[in-house]
Image (cartoon, rainbow, N blue to C red):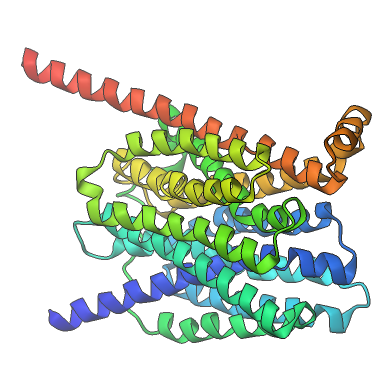
Length: 425
């Protein structure tokens, strides 16, 4: 029995490292936005499209492989995910050597490593859920807290290396990040893994998709994913271009503090989860996130913007993992497909949200009325565009707030019916 406990502990460690790798897949490219823009003349729309491709690919893999995972088990897919990430990151680093205009190679590389990231997103939650423990919600929150720690590490180390080595050396920085998925490949090849729930035991996907609660949960995680990723991925460019902060200051004092607050929020739930009403905390967090987006988009004060960015990390910390917890509690017999479709919903929000910011940032300043306002306010087109983009993104936590209020009302109605039945019985 002690050996089994140690073995499952190694499985948990592999999952924690896996979600750190997912943080690399999602957050490395946005930290390189300005170096890529400077060296290769990429537009904001092209940069935003890389984010869109990343998450769109993850959505596709979430959906395409969910049934295969339930049929063939976890191992071959989780090991294959690491192979894709290693190949994709290496191709991204080599793109400028392969093409004079490397953007098409960046897109292909992004598709490859994002495919691996999509498999990790599909697999890590059900792998944790399959480990024998009574603390499923706590384990899930702890897993997702490691995403935030990975995000902090990616932001701080990449920014530091760009500062020390120079922006032109971004390729070597990408190569260094390959070491982690390469090492975790060997760990996942050996650790014990539980089995997906068999067909006759689980709630079918068709039944889930006909349930209003699950549909609204999909909307909630989509809005929550957008609320998290928009702030995480665009504030680096915003602080540098709109507030004229040095990149190392904006990334370390703003974006990395966002990620740190994100991780602390998830860690707190991992420790105090049993004492907290996660739905109520998520409702409050989504409302606070709306205020944070408005503060970042409207304020000309770097200090206030940095503080709002950090606070937003705490506000959105439970919107993604909390929705997984609410859904797994509501549908305890659902299998990997439930996590796959929810992850796909989150990825849709995380892809559309940043891309929408990029469209607003590129096109809104071209409107005559806004161009006149920009000149009168003393703002450049880039500054105005990024501010309007982040203000538009405030709609995402607002959507999360409304969806979570509905879910809470549904759960309250169910509890009231159950209590009425007990009294009448």
